[in-house]
Amino acid sequence: MIRVLHGDDEFGIDETVRNIRLSLGEDAAESNTVEFEGRNFKPGEVEAAARTVPFLADRRLVLVRGLLRRLDATNATRGRGGAASAQMSSSGWEKFGELLAGLPDSTELVFVDAFPTGPGGKLRDNGGAFRALKSSDTLDISVFSTPRGRGVGDWIRNRVMSEDVQWSPSAIARLSDLVGPNLRLLDQEVRKLSLYAGDRVIQPDDVELMVAPAREANIFAAVDAILERRPGIAMKALYQLLDDGASVQYILSMLTRQTRMLILARHLREHGVDEQEIANRIGLRAQFALRKTIDQAGRFNHEYLAAAHRGLGEADLSYKSGKVRDRVALEMVVARLSGLR
Image (cartoon, rainbow, N blue to C red; front, side, top):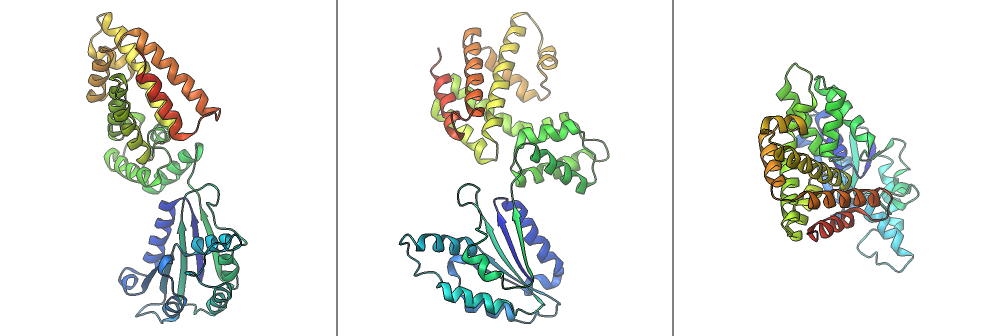
């Protein structure tokens, strides 16, 4: 069989490859798996590996990573004068496709290409790569796309079912808000929460306790830097959140949420409300988050916090309407809030 696994969901692709390896058998997988990198691709070596008889096993796995997209890119630039000397010629690739058509049933040949979405972010169905492979009667093509929006919650819901642990719908929604479409991190958090909760139903408070602190620490660091007029430090904290898989929408919502809590916490402190009651009113359970919020609230006046809240609302609207894109939205927010007096 020949398989093609491609798309922007690197975690899903890696998991599928791992499952294919496991299907060979724990003892047989190591001695019957061969991997090649597309940049060092030599047709003869791959063909020889694919035709080798399995060693004390029924099947053999041959993985080729990053080849098909490179070939598609070469074909796309060939007509515009792009160099293709390092790649296989068109006739050579077609001949290779013919050879693959006669692969033994014991070989599973898997082409893996994980890459970002966007223009050119998927393999072309009519590209040279697919044309050559389609000579095989056993070609199976799977596209892996990272879920967006509500799809993240659906992904978590399917994941928790495999863990045999009950989650409340609100807990799933909260985890989706906190982590976003970073599937590798989501998988880690689902496993961690499942172990933590045991037999009981996982609730939003569990998610806040186990997942939120690390994210909130970066939000607090960003707010601190913004309010102290240190935009470079603020952007470093926000970029770290982006690198960890948080979406721009999530970061804007968290900054807005934190500013709103600062306004409420300052108001309550001025009216003599104790810390425990403040925690109940603004919905904070973690002591670190509560103390940090109260500390920040005491450092800034109502006028500043109100202006910051308005600025975040306007930035959120601009982002949702498509007037600004991605990191530009965050940079505009930091520049604007850092300039407030």
